[in-house]
Image (cartoon, rainbow, N blue to C red; front, side):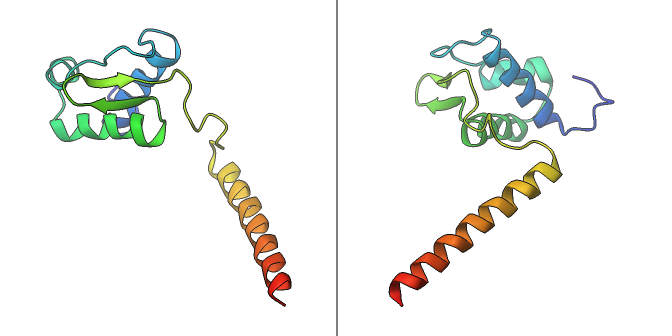
Length: 113
């Protein structure tokens, strides 16, 4: 963790854990550090820890929260691995999706006639 890093703390921690998942430090089936361990290691609040886990789960699809076990690694490759990373790439991606959607709507309108 670097205080000079412009990313929010939760993003820095999430990226560090995601890197550990990708490089095999945390393999599928293993449990990530507990909330108490993360508080001790990173010196952050429960809110930040919850944000980290939510990002790893809902955005990257690398983990799932399991009652009684904690946060468990489910895969080593993010679900969105092919997702564009820069703002320009995201905009171009959205424009392509919009074009595809417009084509589908036009085809449906033609069918209904």
